[in-house]
Image (tube, rainbow, N blue to C red):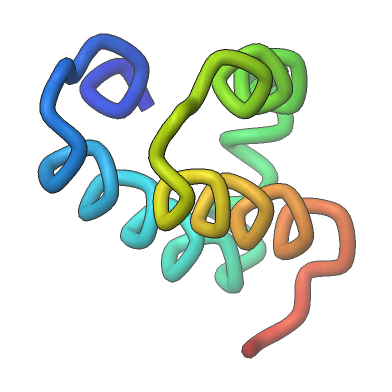
Length: 71
């Protein structure tokens, strides 16, 4: 999460966000992320993100945290 927040280049940020979305399907990972209140962080990142792919991945993470679904 920290790397996704502070990475200036879009490709590594995309990889971080996609990976967070993948990990978010697992309840243990989802619980840990939610416990650390990443929802607000994701929202802030989404508001300032300019890269459309990174925005898509941010939304993917948020949806998986909210619904706990695969896909």
